[in-house]
Image (cartoon, rainbow, N blue to C red):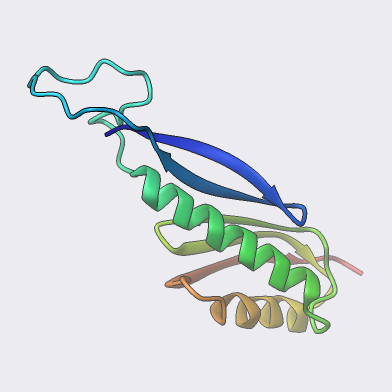
Length: 120
């Protein structure tokens, strides 16, 4: 069976779901030439990409909701569960609080805190 990615928006948040296409199993052993097939050179599977995207979304939501983090200029990237924070915050306390918030998010294995304290 072939997986077809579908993007849904639920309450303003994009969620990736998968639908399985109905069809008979093939008996050919020829490699897939479909453009959606995963390239052998790719080091990240679709499942890992979805997981990282989910973690990034959760981290951004938690940072926006955190009352002890005073910056909206924080950029979040996730790769294999490792979250990298870049941008500026008003104080060292905000930088430390941001890291603590991110560490509490489910799925985060490590936080690389590259946040800079803005000159005042």
